[in-house]
Structures are given as structure tokens and as C-alpha cells.
Length: 430
Length: 172
Image (cartoon, rainbow over all chains, first blue to last red; front, side, top):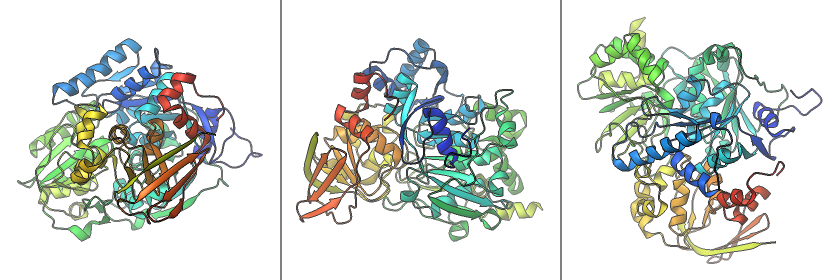
């Protein structure tokens, strides 16, 4: 670790320094050793093509190369099956790690299956790879060509980013979710300001969050426009990763580290948010849920690398239990983030509860999030989704209107058939 | 010192154009061949605009171009349409890198004075980029590129760079 004589550093600067072999600071370009890399069926076939064209014969680090078949789980046509078969054949030849259809979303598996440890530098050929930052990792999304470079060399070049200090204070009130923090960040922060920068989460509010809540915030840091999102490591991190003796190398920001910008959010004052469907190709407008109460809802989507973890589904179910029944018009879709989440739902009786409510429970994976598999909303239908993106056409139909909100707010809409403040149901419990 | 000049008409799109608007995620589940995907370029944003794109057009965007998914087909599809340059006041980082890696020149500059159809001239010289709106005789300042980006672009993209060098140098 750098001594006190060197310039104070952010977490990003420290992790990149440790991986390029010298002290580096924001603005410098460096070549770094990459600890692990992930690609999905959406990005791996193209990465394999680039790898071959680069003259690649053997993966530099097969045991650190993880492919997950999650975007087309399951595939709906022969051409997609062939894309996945190319990944299977490549992995068989190269001996890298492959998670096949049904195991779950790559990002979830990276954390769940122990591929991520504090202090590491990880890239993924998927923008939401930033999620691993919850584990005190510098993680960023890359394209297939950069991924191919890592496949070939085990390294990649980076511009060391400046960081934005996101200071969270207080505690989330009942019925307000980490998703609402992420939406509030996206509402407040101009993507042009966030671009090329890391969001470093600090403060007692950050420390109070569960690991899965931290994952949501780092996951959606890409949707704020940031290069990465990162938390310090603490007892919460160690307990969740459950890695035994190999707990990684925790990295903390120096007290006098330099930040490009400060963003302060008081969790005590936060209320449920909503991202409205984009109009005419513009970015989604983010508002307080009270502004759109009563809007009829046709489909509710619980799932994805943002809102498909066990705690997300548990919180949604908690709201659904209070309501008792699902509105008859609403199609409720549940897509667990991984087979473990699915299995936990079954073991703990939650799966039966979702089925009794009339939910469609889908194969663990990305599901309907980007319209590449699973159920597609109809024309002019309104969706409340626990996902991270609602670009026009995102769920496979440009004529559907997708709202983004917390799992609790999605569950509340499933009960009433309209946009509803989830606190209505949670207050009734007390 | 190598220099490169690109001339062409400005084709305007808005701000926050995400990669799904450039090419829908659901299209790439069937093929990743850019020539095939090119038929669907910009379909969920403005299909008519997508179909009207011609080789040598220069895409001129608002802020945060290429946000959303890191999918690289959103760059290769633009290259397949014959386009070699995109101007925007800011880019999503993965798109920016993917552009460099595939020989699509991403130019960070103020695009507010550029109108649809204006003739633009983009000159890349050393690490610097000069943008001129020849229709309006306006010169626009643009961000320079790092030496590593120039090296990759000069070699013809990251594939050619690594094919040639086999590895990254230890210092860049």
C-alpha cells in the first residue's frame, strides 16, 4: 500500500496503481493486469471473432475468463442456439469457465460463485459489469474487442479516471429502496459530468446498506453515465462474499484524496422514485412516484441484475402479501437472477407464494429486460419494471411504455393494477 | 506525422442516443454480422433516418452518444453503413473505446452550431483533431486523442494493433 509520502489516492487510483506496477493518478494512461473477465452470450461470440482475428490461439488466463449464457436463456430460434454453441465449443477447447443457460445472470454469478474479491480489477463485456464494485473492486464494462484483448494478453489499457464522491447519509426509510437512491443519482447527475469517472460511495448511509443494495448502486452507476462505481470493503462485504481465507486486499480511499465532484444524498429524506418511459428518444425523466399515481399498469417485471436478487424478490413479496391478490389485468413476471436465488425461493416457500399469486416464473437469466428472451409487452401496454433501463423498444416492443421503479413499487402496482406508492401497503402492516 | 481528412454531410441525431437505438439488442441475437444488422440501423429511434444514411455521412449527435449497453455491434453497424466519424459533445465511455477499436473516429466537440446537411471537414493530425463546418465557415475546437488511441486508430483498430504487436507495451 502507498505510504503517506505519496499523493493521496481514491480507491480507483489505488486499485489501478496496484495493477499497473506503479503509482498512477487520474488522467494517466496505464496498462493493467486484469484479474478476471466476464462475457455473455450477447458479447462472447463477437469477442471470440476478435480473438481469432488477433491471432489468438490460447487464452492468457482460462480460469479467470468467465462466460455466462444469460441474454438468450433460453434461446427462441436456431440462429441464437448456434451463437451459444460457438461459445460452448470455444470454452470446451480453451478450458475457461462457462455458465450455461439457467445458471443465471453473469454479474450475479461472478459474485455468487466467488470470482470477485476486494482489491481486484475486473472487466466484463457488458455495461452492468460495474456491479462488482460493490465488492471493493474496480470493475467496468467493455466491448467485445477490449474483452478479446484481455483474452489474448490478460491485460488492458485504461485511462485512470477521476472520481465523484457520492456521500450517503442517514438510513433508507421503510418502503424506500436502493433503487430509489440510484434513480435519484441519475436524476441529479448529468451523464456528461459522470462520464469517464468513478462513483465512490461513502458515508454512514453507504455503510448501512446491505451488500445487495450496494450491488444495485454500483450496477446502475453505468446508467448514471459513470465508468465504475465502488464501495469500501467492510464486514458486510466479507460476510456476503463468504470467501473463506482468501478475502482479497481491501482498498480504502485516502482521507485527502482528490475528487472531481461531490454528490450528497440524505437517505432519511428520500422517497420512492420512478423513471418515466422516454419521449421521442430523449433520456427518461425521473420523478417522485406521487406524480404518476393511478397510471394503469398491464405488466410487472421482477428480475434482472438490478432487481432480481433474493432480497429484491423478498421485499416485493412482502408488499404482495399485504395486498393479498394480484390485479387480474396485470401479468406478473418473476425472473430470479440465478439458479441459487430460484432454489432459495423454492426452499423458503416464496416460489409457491408467487405461483399462488399467478406469477409467471421464468428461467434465471436476463429474461425480458432487453427483449431478447422471455415475455414481451404488447402494443401500448404499460410495464412497471425492477430493471435498470427503459429505452424505447428495450423490452422488445417499441410501442410498449416501460416505467422503472423499486421491486416494492412494482409489487404495489401488481396488486392495484396502477402506479401505487408501496408505502401504502407497508404502513398498513405496522 | 500522419494526417487523415474526412469530408461529408452532417446527419443530426439527438442527445442520449443509446446503443439500443443504434441497433436493437433483439437483432443481435440472430446475427452479429454488421452488414446484415445494418438494415435495421436506428430502427427504434427513427427508422426513416436510419434508412437514409449514406456512406461518408458524418453522424452529429448531442451529449452522451452511445449510452446504455456496451454492445460493440452499435459501432460495427455504423462502420458497415460506411460511416467513419461521429461528432458529439460527450460519448459514453464504452462506445468511445469501441469506436477507436473499430476505426470509427469519435470526435468530442461542441455540435450545437451544426445543422442537418452542413458540409463538415474533420482533419486528424498527430493527437489533434480539427473540425470545420465548411458550409458556415466555422472552425470548432475538438478534444485531442491520447497517444494510445492514435496508435490503435493508425494501425486500423485494436484487432490489427494486437495482431501486429501481440501485446500491449508496459508503458503507454
